[in-house]
Length: 489
Length: 56
Image (cartoon, rainbow over all chains, first blue to last red; front, side, top):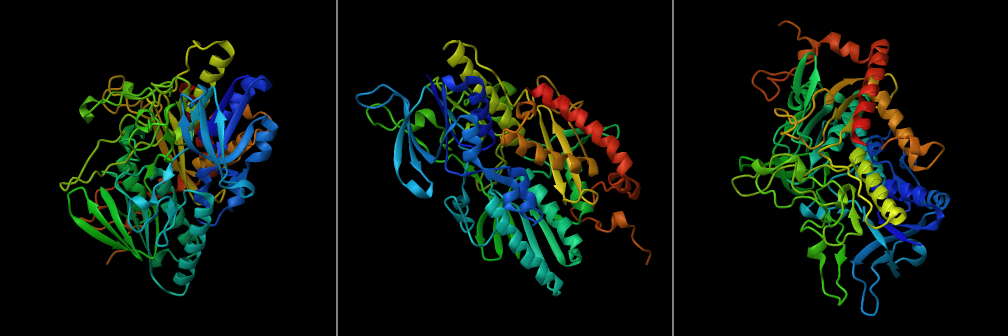
């Protein structure tokens, strides 16, 4: 019997574990180690953040789902990887520390034959003074990164709306809380949901809404922007985004590294080196991401974390980490199999793998501060790579150790993205976008780097309906309900 | 002073949004026209299915 351990139960880890359990059957064991007791459909946290959904609407308990799937579930956080075993044993193992109330703090060594690191990120609020401490959100801003964060954001928003109904003017600042953030799309969706809710509450005239982000141009979204075919033009996402911001009366600050948060005030540095500050009554700033801090140790106990992990804490895979300057970047730099180059039975997927470099062109201020989006690895690509990794491992377990690995390069896959504004079936709208491929390939698609036949975007009710459908569809799939394997990632 | 058109209400000369493209009233109406959006729903779904298919 072989044992596959999956560290993390988010979109990528859950996809990998559930497909592996299905393909391996009861002859082999799949273990999921995740510190959370619930699965969260993160895209719908936006609706929780404006009070249109509750945390219960976007989460469910993992234990019964894993029991149904025959997956061994450990509510614990991974602490260290020992890819050569320890003195007296050559068997690879991971050390985990339980987080469930019954045995919190207890540790266990879990041996593995194959390991998938899908821990997702550490929400590194502590990288910006005042934004938070370590992975803990601070008191001055809100977040929509987790369902609980989003619920808190909703209650703070409600307080602002109450003040506005009493005639007080309020300032809203939404965006990224550091120069090296990703997930601009989540903040983008949140700002327009807030704008929609304020309009619905009849207080829009008393709101000053401003976007602040590390993008060098509006509509970069961490993917270097995109060109969408519409109205006979190939339109840049910059024009698309600026149009939407103008239409909704939202101002913007771009190329910004937020370097300090104080009560009601954000300090920032711009790409031109100038410093500024922005006051706010309500602010949602996405934190930068880092690896969760997993360590790795050799058989003799020496620290080999640098061998397995990149300096940012994400796990090294089959990417080209020596691409160098932007001018040298190629689509082929991006990993295909997500296998660790040193330890062939270790894989990483989702946010946990170390990307070779950003997708957006790196930029820095004259002061040397790096200000550019880091690459997104969430949502659809995250699920696709989780499934590909699970397929590879299952083949190696079932067909032999030399079975070919499956590939899922972000330079060869697309992504569908729907950013809603509002939740009502007939009064909400959404920007529906597809991008193909996620990582531009300027050799295959000279010019925009993408296939404009499959890269498009438009605003309307249709995208909004799709957002609703996706919410229910992916929760259905994640709960492993009838026909779940038929629903694509 | 003449009344500003709805779609131009947020534009100020030489402000950061002065060069933005803004949708006219027809475009905005079509965004919430249920019949048109039902057609777009089918078209967008088909496009997304193709992109998903090419990605697996």
